[in-house]
Length: 245
Image (tube, rainbow, N blue to C red; front, side, top):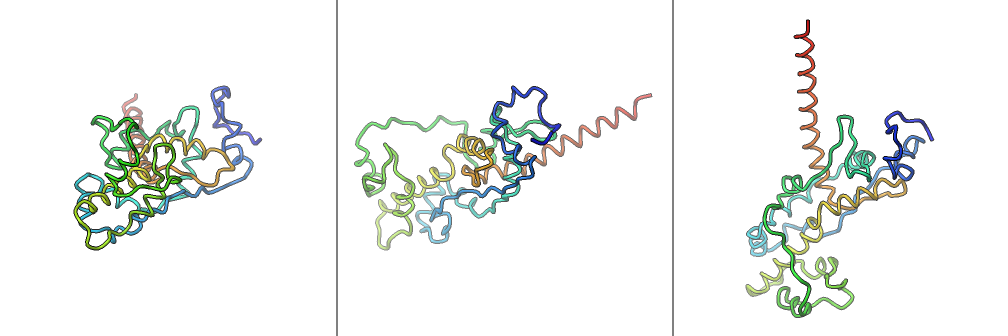
């Protein structure tokens, strides 16, 4: 393996270095990761969402999520970040120090509230009855994974609102669309992102899941903050040097 002066002198700290992408990079091998993105109907065709359904989604506080899919992913930037990710610490090792995506960033970048009580509940009860009551339909048996409904069924079943529907059906479509947004974009954002970054450090991995929109927005914001800190540090050192006898 080629020599690299950026590695820690104590290699016992880097327990996963043998499988890390940097080993291949030092040998001249390269790759560009492609992001895995679900083909979500409501994100591709937001203009076809019925205004009455859209109003309920907005009132529930999820309207802004419909806008984020319009952003293009910078695959080169994502690949570069993954090359600096360390599984041992779940941080990016940058020239100016270590940094990482936090729960606060999830709130700032995606508008997801993090200060209220967590939304949790037991899985007891009649799931089929609950689906019929809240969604107006029951998924086929093969569309369940344990007590979870597969995203593919929701994505296929709930698209354009049919004509001549009552208020109950409008509410059910709004619930289904919100479920799709939560499952595909928001839950659990940080855990999935960390796991995806861990997998991305393997050279044989050619794609990456997780919320790349969060990662990209975070990096653009973090780079500005890091640059400001760097400039402030340089100015401080310059002032100290000028004042020195």
